[in-house]
Each structure stands twice: as C-alpha cells, then as structure tokens.
Length: 296
Image 1 (cartoon, rainbow, N blue to C red):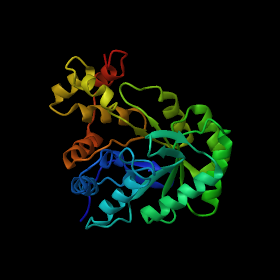
Image 2: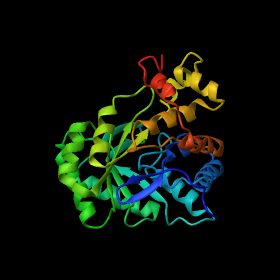
Image 3: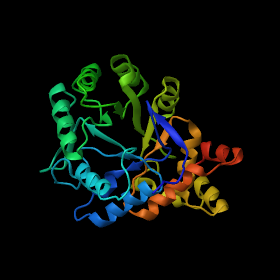
Image 4: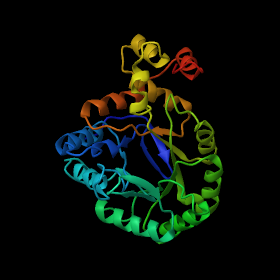
C-alpha cells in the first residue's frame, strides 16, 4: 500500500512528512483505549506520516516508565504496511516518580545511557533513529549532558540526536559538542506560545529541524482557539475547515525547518492534521494570524 504524497521536510539526512505524530496522548489517562490508539497510529501511517514522537516518561499518572514507548511499538508493529521509512523519536533525561506523580530531570551520563538502552529494548530499535534530550538538568552544565549524548552517538546506540525545551544559547552549546550528530530541536510552539521564534530562525540557519510540540496550545488554550473572535477561528470559518488545520498550516509557513507534532488519539484527528500540510494560506491570512491580536 503506497502512502499519500504529502510535503516532505528534512531531519538531518532523512526526509519525513511535514506533519508528525505526537504519541503522548495515546496513553495519558488511566484506562486508555489501546484499540483506538492503534487505529490512530494506523491512520497516520496510511496518510503518509512517518515521524512518531514518544518519550520514556509518557504515560498515565502513577505508572511505570516506558508505557507510551511500548504502546507505540505495538501500534506500529500491528500495521500491515512496511515500516522501513518510519522514524521513531524518543527522549530521555526526565524522571517521573509514580508515588507522587512529580517530574524532575537527570542529565547525567549514567542516567542517559541507562535510559537510552531501556528505550532501545522497549521500542525494539537498535540504534534509536532519533534520541532527544528531554529537558536541561539545572544541576549540571549543559555540556555534560551533550557529551553524554555524543558518546551514545559515537558508540552507535543512536543514529541521530535531538534536544528539547532549549533556548538559542543552549542550541549553540549543543551544536558545538554534537556537531553533525545534532539534527533537531523540539520546543513548544503555538498561537499562544511564540517565544520560540528565535529558536526557529536559528534552526533554519543551522539546517536543523524544529519539532513543535503543543501546536494547539494544549487544554489551557482550547477554549480560546475556538473563540469566534480569534483570528484562527475567523480564517477557519471562511475556509470551511477546522481551526486546528489553520494553526498547523500557519506554523508550516513560518519556516521550512518546522515540523509540527500534534498529539492524536483518534483517526479523525490525524486526518484533519494531515490536511494542513497542503493548505496554502494567503498573504492576508498570514498577516492576520501573525498579528499581535491573532489570539486575543
């Protein structure tokens, strides 16, 4: 079965569809629907999505590490089509304590190596296609964590390296340590969270992919996104499409480096997101969406 042709964007030496799949939402609540998650992943594959983002700490509160990675592997391996072009991006460097459901970071060499090897086992991928440092550890110089990732790359445990939740200064540090092993930056970016504009520009200059998480602003902004007074709602209404499509298409127009990774747990959401990859916004629409009042 051949996948539909959707615009491609580069992550280092490979190309993937311009829209990725954020798998965190597959397993974020206790009693999550395994079958529905599989259908969502299969719908993404059939629509041409080839980038799937996960992390060792994603899963329901109070549960063990690796639940999301395991669920994603199951969904991918139960698809009837080929997986040779699929790129699974996972992350390490975060901690989650089941007893209190609190999050912390551990960017030490020891932890990152242990986390990387555990992810290899859960995903059944050796080397990992893209291994991302989840978040800077405030207790350590950033260079230490980057040197740990460089070692994983040099040893052949990971094929490519990414960083996440960083500013431009940390991107420069990562590049100086990792060199060509560094292929991507993953930061939050949405109509309500535009602080990453400088990081996007730097990624374009450095030929790095920018993977935007939370492209719809998350639950805290869901109501605002649908507010009929918002610029995104006005464009969507005039086009007869979803607001989510407009939000994704707006991001794709920002820079050729941007690859949004919207979360999805239903096939319908996946197909709606994929449609944004071919949505051509006009100059007037972009001016409206880029304005300071775009989300007011």
